[in-house]
Image 1: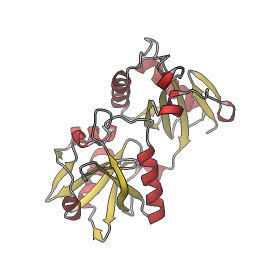
Image 2: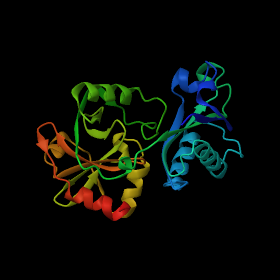
Image 3: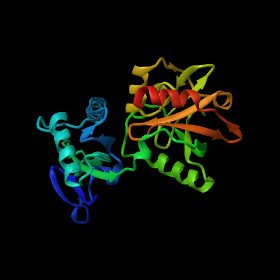
Image 4: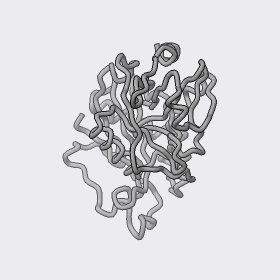
Length: 271
């Protein structure tokens, strides 16, 4: 998919460019949404827009009236259509500090870029083979006022993903500064014990995931700190994000999990 949308202008990816004082490049100052488009529609779009614009306000961006959810959604769909991805694709919408001045504070109006990526149907289905995961070492995320944001400052996730690749894991789990497990490199985490579904509270430092929020409207979920002893003793573990939906975890170290309730949950919501 060779076309991107940069500040409302669709152009070939190879011809696009940003100034070197771009705030996301220099300081990680920005947000992004990763969205699933199916049948020409952004899935869970209201939740995406609510999270994005809440985050922009938290980062002190001054958003022009034109740049509202309705207009931005039209730009996303226009870009998807240009790339002929209406049936199924992944969209990455990044909002960034335009740059200028120290920490990009000269301009408070955000810029944006929209990218599209192809998806195979299997990506949005429940996985036949469970994931193998481990805990990233030497990386601890602070549970502060910014930790819930899907921020462009993603170094901890990038390094954790490299650790996962080196260890031949499918994903790496991230701990907070208290040593509790809070999420993976690309997903929120849930676990099941005696039929009850749990997930860490946002106060632990995990990203406020769109799929996490959606699932909590569908089934009862108890928020609880995820200690190592809890994941070792869980009956099932699954990961969620807006594109891959629900993916069940087969193993964590030497611990092997079942998948019955995770698969049933997927089928009841998306089947």
